[in-house]
Image (tube, rainbow, N blue to C red; front, side, top):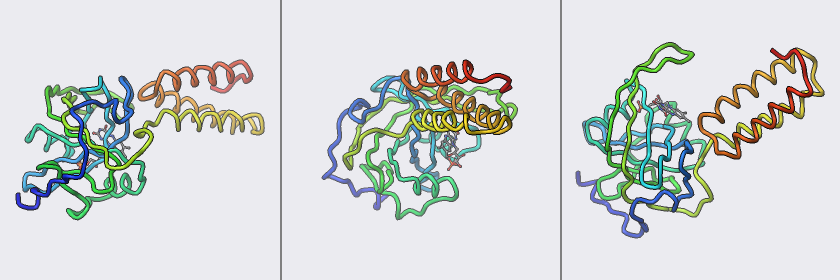
Length: 224
Ligand SMILES: Cc1cc2nc3c(=O)[nH]c(=O)nc-3n(C[C@H](O)[C@H](O)[C@H](O)COP(=O)(O)O)c2cc1C
């Protein structure tokens, strides 16, 4: 583990409090989870992280991911916050090399992250989930937040809610310019955005979607 002895002493850490990073109860953020592989190398994958309360997070992990296997074995993971789309892209499309990781104590984090925090697993529940793609085995991981480390100043972690609302608003403003088929297609997209917001968005995002949908229903007929 020699390469893991590089402790970033310059980093300021706080005892588990997600408010320090602007994370709010009940919101789901798109993050990069870093874990330790059986051969002690590091793994990174984009994963949604639900902020249960300032000291706890929940992950919903599909069976077969390295992330789940690593967490089940080592009982910890690191949540990295970034708005760098290339990190999401690279960690989704392939495995990133060891050079991209740094270590805080023995915990791997992504060098480019704005902030990260360590999480100790408290509970793992295995479930079968039925969705549009059929049925899938998943695990629900509840973890306790340990040290929270801010590397760079940043405003907020990534939540899809606001983007879904903005996309819906754009579709709405284009509906009155569109023919019936295009309107139906926009309506389908707005319903999909609403599904996303109901799953991951804030109170304001949900209220926005309700208002957008009510307005569309009052102005347009026969969109189904
Ligand atoms: C933005 C984003 C969010 C994701 N969230 C999840 C998630 O919450 N749970 C999950 O099991 N997979 C999620 N995925 C898919 C995993 O990242 C993907 O399966 C990845 O290949 C797993 O990598 P691993 O095998 O190295 O763990 C997400 C992907 C993206 C792009």
